[in-house]
Image (cartoon, rainbow, N blue to C red):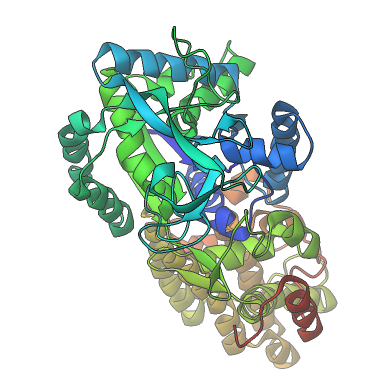
Length: 565
């Protein structure tokens, strides 16, 4: 039986993550993991905070904290927010862990042994005013490719090109803003990607099922030619190289961060070594299917650089089977940005509305095939129409009406007729399509099917009209109410990976036993009759409330953004 290893791109430690980070990796990885678990699959969902590199040092400096203390605090913040958004990570680790230090040094040593790392004399930017070398992210300037004036020395946030600090035009120190810089020599280790290029290409091209976004970015990098990449930096915060002559060097954050997927699994196992085996998930793990979730700026590192590390180790580490990449979620046409504090952040969002509102909206608008834009009008419209009207109103009016006419148990009476058989036939088709899209991780299409399933409940009610039938044919009304309440059960089960809190509310309201909450694939006529006459239920509080125009105006004023963009 296949086991499923799922990873989300590691959220960086330098601040609370925005909704673009959430929908670009963490939330869809949780959706897929929840779906597989509901289907009885063995799943390990791994994530961690990415804690090394210069932005962590800069953020700690701005907070007037030691960088280790800053990272510890921010890890707790991000872990709590993950829980608030119902992210079901089996383990949420830290790249500054001892496990990651040991594994990173292991990979570095293996690559060196196998001839894929060499030491080179490099030219590095030195800040005279700061009296120190400036690693890549400590240097800011203008991108030589697109003229974005806030590019960093490792990568341009605008055009996503990889850079070296010496490539930047008009460079300045990110610490002090000083332009009093000069280039000096410093010795560093380089990963010889050029020697691994053919192996990486062969590995990439065999994955014919990857989304176009993932494969096209990987092949673009390979077609442009892989350059040998510096994997050490002149920093104190990071994984020390542990090699004579390099005592003041640490591994580059993009070398150690992907290794944290393995290390976080070891952190998870080390908590309960008597019944957890981390290595079986990663080393010679032939029964494991490994799926990664990430935004497009992370794709090159996960499809080229990290695979090069694994291949160059000449050890049988598990390599990714499927890379689910995402485009950007923009905010009124501009990019969400942690560094520029643009957009809506998880801490603000969860104060405004419960997680299920955000989860559903973001998944329904997941930027799979192109960039998408968040607007407050679109958010409110989706939540009001789909969650409040289509799902919430259906649940509320059915359970309230049934209580008022028949009491708080499913009523007896009536026989299954053509209307119910037609409903079951259409449900079979819709549910099969929904499951197919979930299997294929086609998220927006899956959400469209889920909404269509909710709509079917309202269409059935419109036809059956139990409030009218009750006056002349109480048994027909009883049948349609019984069917409708069984539909609520079906909705609760199918919606659980998407809106888990609301699903739990429905499950509790219907007093469902675990056996009555098994995942649904077919046999809908039977599913519509699982809850029998006499089954007790309760009327829950309003499942989803409507978002008002006044709230939209208030949020636009607080966070920026207008209907004009």
